[in-house]
Length: 323
Image (cartoon, rainbow, N blue to C red; front, side, top):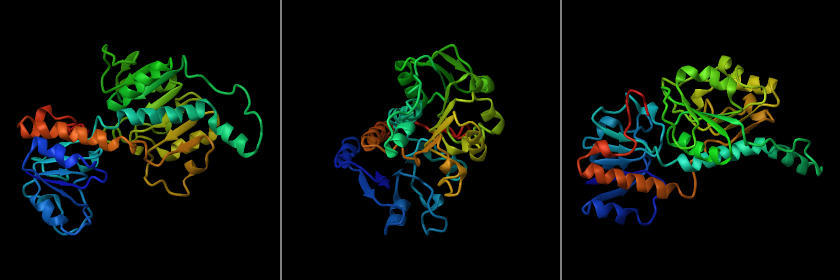
């Protein structure tokens, strides 16, 4: 089995771990711009990485991978490849790798504003004692709306419950069955009411044709004047211009954005200059434990791939829903 990987931070144990499952595996580590990549791509049975490369790069188009059967992507959101790769490829996403770390990041953003740390930073820079009252707004008793109850949303919910928040999760359809930490599950049709009810909204939806522009100007206007918004899903969920306008008009509201639309966010975009916005440039999944979690996912999927049981693989890409 020829395994080609362009993943950037494999641990030293990776090759040995793979060969415990596939003893005769040939493992090649090359990035798309490296010499020899086209030959390795043409002969690969399995690929780890992003399967679309620079347009016009000789020998690296999807149709050039004559033997490829399975792609394990490093991203949880891969809607942009839909329709651009062969239908016979088995594609698995990195869903399950990012939930814990992104959930921590959600609360870093949330607490930054709810604990008024931005005011504390400003006061320290001005060498001023005091940040006003109330010094912070407790999360206890607040309503948290989580848009999307996948791996990230479920991890956020568990942590929110520990803070004493009331958690309402939204998925495609309402359900009486609530994941741990979730008090209520509503469907997409309840989004308007949910936005009006929430003290904080966490967007953890994938970026697909079904979710694009979900939070437009009208829906953003439904939120409470002092509500917070955290986006760790995809930037395409939110109308960035409408969000900037609303935040400028509602100084008590705030937004913590790890993703934006477009990316990179242009330097002259209004969001950069707003004091009630914190932008972390699409970094919340890049932690010290990423390699460990990603390799564990790949090895799990590799075992099922070798066993001829692809339905048991984690993160199998659904071409209809695009996640």
